[in-house]
Amino acid sequence: MNTTKIVCAIIYVLMIAGTLVMVGNVGQYMDIASATVVVVLSVLFAAAAKGDDSVIQKFGNGAVWAGWLGSIIGIIAIFGSEGFAAGDLSMLGSAMAVCSLTVFYGYFFKLGTMILD
Image 1 (tube, one colour):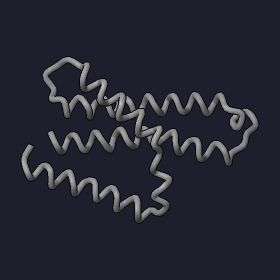
Image 2 (tube, rainbow, N blue to C red):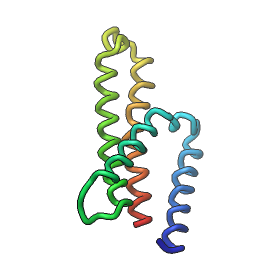
Image 3 (cartoon, rainbow, N blue to C red):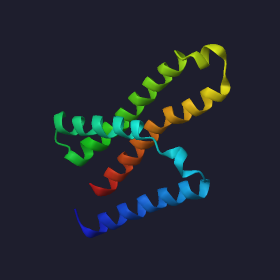
């Protein structure tokens, strides 16, 4: 890993952070449970997957798959919730936002690993 890759990764993180700040309400993009699912599954995938890819590439690939898996789990939880059965849209909107965060985190890490590898 050379200095150029590190600088590009830092610029990437700053660009994403700047975009989230400009959109407003940065807190809506932060969810510890969603981030934990993506990071833990990505680390496990990187440690267990076989192949010629680097550990960084495996982590990035695992992050995307973990993001989609987390999103599917969230969608199933939403469909099984009382808010969905009652048609309470105020509950569904925030739940869908959190459900989408795992995909966001997955691709955030994947693009970061593409820069670093």
